[in-house]
Length: 279
Image 1: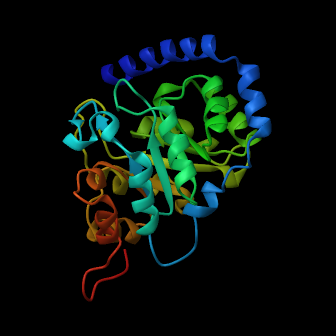
Image 2 (image 1 turned 45 degrees about the horizontal axis):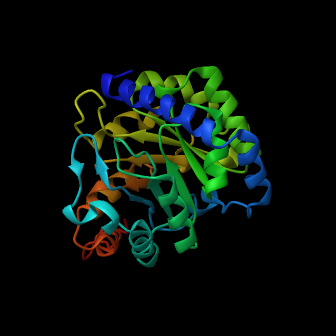
Image 3 (image 1 turned 180 degrees about the vertical axis):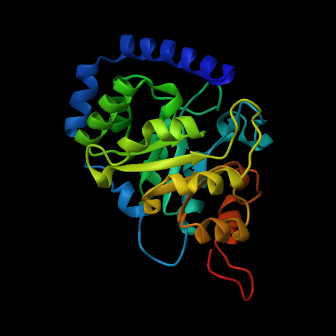
């Protein structure tokens, strides 16, 4: 595990212990029992049409870039407003960062986003304990991110089963060949319509981003209809390159969040150039 990811995971484990002390698992389970059913995240992003499905991300800061825009400082940051812009401009789903220390998110941001839009919402965080899966469902998440590098094989299997029981879609994220080979057998486990496979184009050791990373690994993926390319996607031409390789789902965050108008940036991304193919 890269050093930066190790630090994040260690901090997350301590945060989970604090959360458990404040809210018991039984209390979370009670909230889940009373909650409305999740929206179908899997169906929303695997729709069979001629346009790439974009999971548009609400992201305040990152460890590598810091605060993405000055106006995102403090209470001026309104994730629900950004999510509404995304929905109005063609997003298939929303990804919401909830890690506070490294990304400036909060679990309440997810709840606010979910209340503001009608499309499904992914909780993007460093999930290392089944408690967080229950916590995600209780907060209104329709899907959760599981990062292969953060989990042992047994932890991964247990969380895939729990997520399916809670009717949550899983985005199972990998970064390199080794992790892709390790988790490939579990994509679609325990039920095919609850799991997506993500390839993150960011190198966690250098923090550099290369869209071609997905294109290099795509031949290792049997079912590309559930493949999500993450990071480094900025233009309609990028979407077209991915579509030519059979990749029809992308997760885009920092590019949109850096724009003066994130909604317009999404609309521009989804607009094919003149005489061009549909992104």
